[in-house]
Image 1 (tube, rainbow, N blue to C red):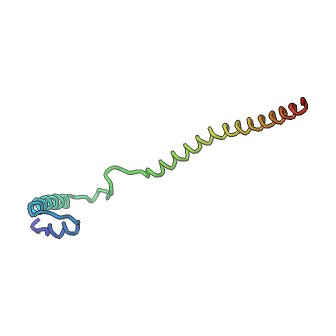
Image 2 (cartoon, rainbow, N blue to C red):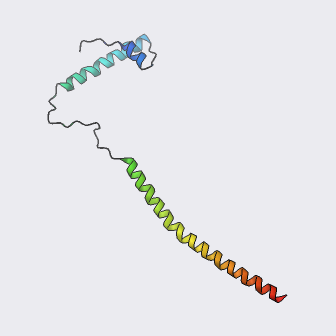
Image 3 (cartoon, one colour):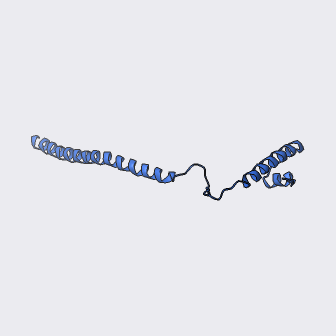
Length: 108
């Protein structure tokens, strides 16, 4: 490619402060990259599907949501029997304490 890039303008747009030696070096790198892209443009890609990623991506948030729901279900399946047992124990202990306190009054 014979175009000369204004590396200073690109650096300014990128909010980079480059020294003259860095500008010269990066200009050469940019030229090489553009030449490589021009070579890729010469390839016949009529039967190639356009892609945005080389590796197929999945919705990772859906997986996280599924795990969260699964953990919540597991947690509640463990918590509810414990909660029921505590409630039952409290009722028994309250009933037992009422019985004990009424027996204690009658002994006086």
